[in-house]
Length: 291
Image (tube, rainbow, N blue to C red):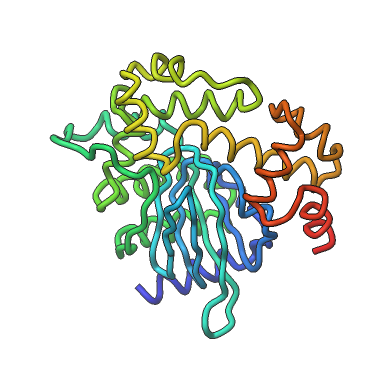
């Protein structure tokens, strides 16, 4: 696997200190130290392969650590705080990712035998060691960055292979649940997307449970199991992350930003913001802009 990892590192070495598009649909790469406020974000469902260095990802009170030659799967939109670290040798952090699309996963599942059983109340993000077969698929995909005229014909084939290899691994159930419309995870995903798109609106958990076609108690259990957060905590985290982006960009002061993300009390906003990020809104934004 060393040769495959070396080739992937060479192919991804053109990445920047942020999410860098490759020219291949849904495939991105990142290299080096990433600004703190960009690592604290609402992450889209993805498969992420660590090539060099390491990364930690915290959602709620749960933290996972990702080392080289491991990959993680995030099966739902999650507000998370990340941190990346260079390799002990000093080489910068380097990773590549595939954003997951339910329709593509469902199309692949339609060509495979339907599995029996499945995970119940399982966390929506986890980590596993990469296999040689999965690395092979990633190498073929990333070689397309040097052959752009082949992307349209071959990228969908390689994407299916990457997804197929993940399906064969310990986190395959996550992809299956993404692509199957009547699983608990996919039902929770409906509620999660509503919160993410309407985070500034008042939250009625009963309405979300009805949206997910679950009883109120089952909805709470599934939501907390998948996201490591309650629905109200999820909404608060999304609000605070969005507010931080607005403040760093200079789009208003603490009061106007607080109101724009759904807070009725600027004082409560400042208190919860400082608890989440360690500093009051204006001081935190100034520190990030200066950095």
